[in-house]
Image (cartoon, rainbow, N blue to C red; front, side, top):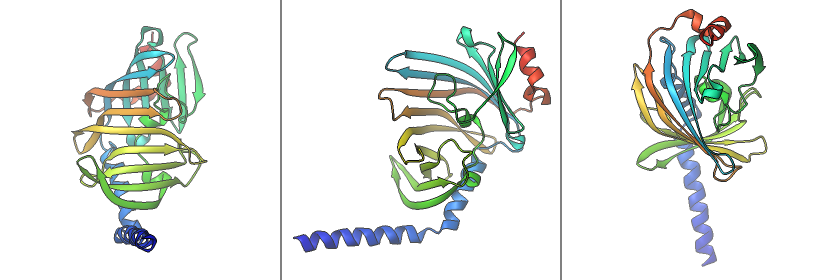
Length: 252
């Protein structure tokens, strides 16, 4: 019986190696580039209204409504709070690789980090930037599998620099088109920090937008945030939208 069990383990191990070898690293790198291209807007601008519903075992349920504006070709975004009323007018502006937080009460901008949590939610500021997986990570392991009804690539990634929010990630990417359906995000010690689900996408122009996202905090049981998008537009935005003066002006 022991010999049979050992044989089974060896066969499963060899099958795993064969399955991975059947997909080359070049092909997996192409999949990551496809993800970046499919979820970015390089020839148009992007805007939408986001509703974030956060559940916390101590704070209860909180709701935020935020307007998002993106110009991916210049790596810029603006996030403006609409609700709750106490936060209305606050904003986050990414320009020239610097992320600024604006407080309308003090009328001052302060420098902040893309790695920080967005408000009191489970989202990170970096979640609202366009995808740069192929630039930030290298694949270290991959295989084919399924996630629900979808055929997927399961890819483990490690960061190639320390500017990313998560040094290690595991992704479940649909085969056609290449879109992230699930992500596990890990610390430097490879502790699972967050699980992100993207159950629903909408196609806008030539790109895809996750109009539903579910972010689960793996360190605090019962803590999660669901993000939904509506009013999606790819109309051109005025250049002034991505400036500090605009953020100050719309809050007067």
